[in-house]
Length: 487
Image (tube, rainbow, N blue to C red):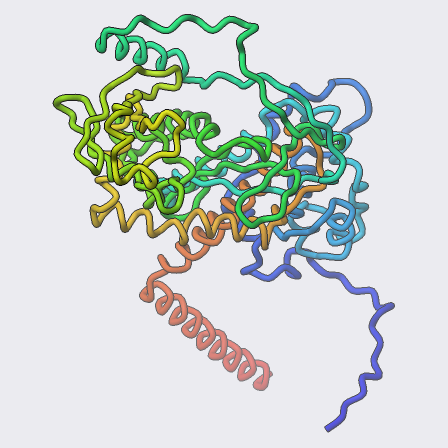
């Protein structure tokens, strides 16, 4: 039956309670019950002057930007429009139906004047994670580390090529010490110190628009200026920490900063850390194994020319410290270079008459060179452990944990690209996105946990009490009517 609505209540005046218009299971209600945002006042009290006009509540400012990233709203301008017409958002901010919402430029002005170069957003991230840890939701017995790129707001065709110094590895001092010890052990003199004029340089592509970003390209993916979010999560997909770099920084280079953050903040013993092939380096394997952590790594294909012998075809003899080639010839130790690799070289006279020369080496002097890092035994131990059932199980969970975190961040929270420029602003944005993701999970889990903890017995007793009260009221009403009828 066709029904045509003739009533129009647009101009009606009604008295309503804002709290009654927000559904009980709405996300903002769950968040409000999960965490008290009053800790923000202590973080920002020194950023405000005691004089001047009253400011907008800093908690309101933070909640506005949380709404933006919680619900994946693309811009602050659109976020304010949504808040103006959304009852739940107004309730979350503590604003009435008629109260004016702050201008969309307010947060940006406060960021530039107050919050920039502070640890406010990092503190918010840590406070939410601490709350989740206190509730017992964080399980860092296994940790999953990987990186994902965030497209920068920069034209990939507008750039300048500049020469920069190759930065020394942060563990260079430790590496050089062990290199010199290894050289002395083999009867070689220690390496000379590198002079400033001898520092190697490399060519770098620098964006004209966003100089902090870096040219990112990987396999078949399109080249673009981007940032990298190096991230660690636990078994339950709670983000433990992150480290932001430009898009041209290799995963293995950024690992140490992220690992140090996790190590300093973690209160639970970690059994294994699952890392991708990009993190398989001697130093990373040594660092994890020295700390009693199992590196859960994948198989890494040898980077050898097609049709040539692979490195594993050359057998290392630990007792005599030499390599044996597929033709049973010995490659003797030659030196230990500045990068920490021992060099083992064959006898050219043996190679000239070898039938396997064409699939062994292309060197002009007919000499085969095989290198072995001074920390190679840590790599071999990690490769041995990857065959263990437990390590296989941990590594297989990467697709359910860290990969899922990146998928949700990009699809639901707008981390696929950024409209902001500069490393500090990207760090702020990623801090808020990851804070929202942890907050969302914390709020939902607390709500479910509360619902599941309600036992049936109290529910039935409450229902019985309600029925009993209703019956008593009915009896009293009948008695009252009987008395009134007799008067």
